[in-house]
Image (cartoon, rainbow, N blue to C red):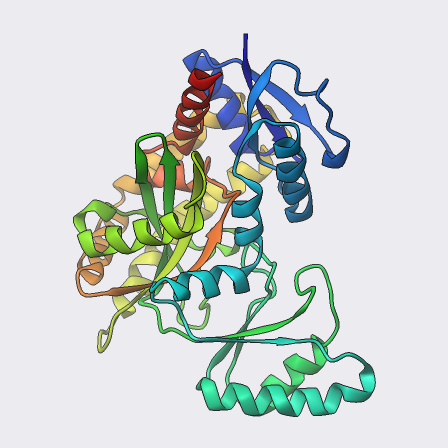
Length: 373
């Protein structure tokens, strides 16, 4: 008998939700915790046919995908997808190559030594100013959760940021990445896409709404408000998202990723977005506080209460009004896909805001893969 397995290096509520869903649907899901995926052996994967790789560390996720494939098991997601999603430069370059609208960007390798630093800074500044206009966004090439992203408004600030980020580190191992600042209508989109035996599909979508114009980052880890979006109501956006997902998962039989996309709308006053968001913020912050206070308790013990809190938020008149405003804004927007995520969080925000549980799709993919064994 063949099994599926869940590989993880940190147990979050996303993995807990997947375990609960697998148990409810009768999927035998072996749990594999690791801090050293390179040591995984055929014994560890005895009778396992497919592995869901949910390692949070990008380096572990990459090594795990490589190791599992070498042991001749199906892995969701594959090494190729993990590598693409872990490197924003490769993602952007590949998407642009195949015609996806992406923000303009500039990547420059680090100077070889400190003696070249000043010349390197001048070179980067001149090239950035030739290609991009202020404000410019500094983005880690291997970052996540909105960490390390800086909005730069002038040459002096750009020089300062370059000087502070001129050496390799974990989130910028090879060089610096500067990107065009795209004026968003107070939110961006996170689109969950999948690939299965019968083709590609869009599972669900949320708008991640920032609370004020000064906070251009919309990541929910930074307080961005999640609002469910019916992407199917916008066929042009669905086509663009599917095309991007196909480019990233083109060689795979099974996969599931989250695309981040910025809607671009011209000559629109969207202050109403911030007004409505702030009217909802207190209720959402109560949910965030509740989740944080319970993170060391068993997820199953407080999951239902969290869901009820989200239901109350979604029934709030300001939240309903915000959802309608976002819907209207999307009708006149163009999407620019700017990132792809292989291991995305979903149990708190995406699942509750949309009413669609990505854990169900993980289980679907496992069942499909097991049918082949």
